[in-house]
Amino acid sequence: MKLADAPISASHEHALGVCFGKLEGITDGILSGWAVAMTSEPHKPAIEILADGFVIGLCRADVYRHDLVADLDGDGCFGFLYRLPLSLLTCRARLSARFANT
Image: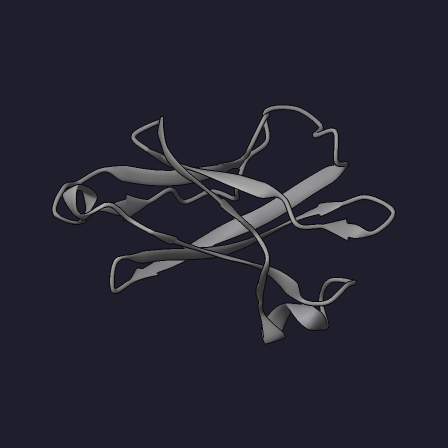
């Protein structure tokens, strides 16, 4: 399995404002990263997880991350975790993420 070497994408300016985030890694079959949509207040967006360009799941960026508290306004709950299907753990799929509904 390979992580896309790119930030989390949005195909156009999201209705929630400027969106940015990053996939960070896979540990024990769990994909992790962070994402935020900046409006007048930081928003916890829904994130689509993709394998080879196909959506395989959805999660929300609402997990507390102490390392993001200083960098982003808000409560620091911008992380996400997604348990990968067992069938993906043994293949060479390219994983990526994007903001849902973009």
